[in-house]
Length: 366
Image (cartoon, rainbow, N blue to C red; front, side):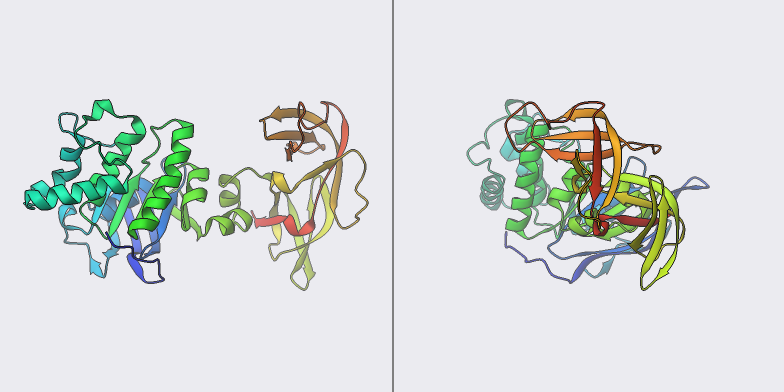
């Protein structure tokens, strides 16, 4: 299995694809995007957003109502699922319980009529790749959940597809194993150089694994960008709110000239911020950008609001402080517990100031 470095050459082109069920259920609505060769690409969104339907259209299990799916330069309109240069790993693993690990992994090659000697060599190679070397004679019920997932991966990779499709592949694993498998999948993808397309509803999973992410809502793609770009520079309220935690304040904005606007959004008033959105707007800031102090910050450039600590949630390495500032919702600040102790050092009901830099403020048109 040769590594194929990621490039800007598209291997998947989805052009104006729509999928309608019945007379009016638009599961996917006029989606266009490309996935580059050798890329780890994620389709991310809440349940019912269309991400799995889009993946199934790539696999050939669903047919687009409108639009084209092109894989490796070929239009897939007349290409059956088993003839496409893709393979799929399902949420349920779909490992055959009556076969050994080696038989499971080599099953697809056996069906294709590959010689036994070559199957044996490729099975051994695939098992080493997913760190299951020496376990070929075991039965699936002798394996852990993570090991069974690796068997499913090896079985998909052994046929050397151009694209590997993964439908919520880690959702059945516990939190610690899930995190370990995220790292393993990234290592595996970089090793084999095959394009991976993963469907997930887990923001942290997509952020930690993917080179680029398409965020979907109600059949539409709302933004496609790198994890850092999505988190730090979301282009709309849905993406900002769906990716990670965020503070949101509704208000209004008017032009202030030179790429700036005058914003009034309780509890902020008459603040000049970078942006072009006017009329009804949403002001936002990530909780880790918010500082908390007992005294009013001396830096007049900071956006500062006085309030009282409403709630404290302790998570070990960090604490979440919810500060009531008289708005519809409290301001959430994430405080790192950098020193040993029992928490962030603030008490419920205590008067504090929350503040953040103007450049850390996000502005969305409503």
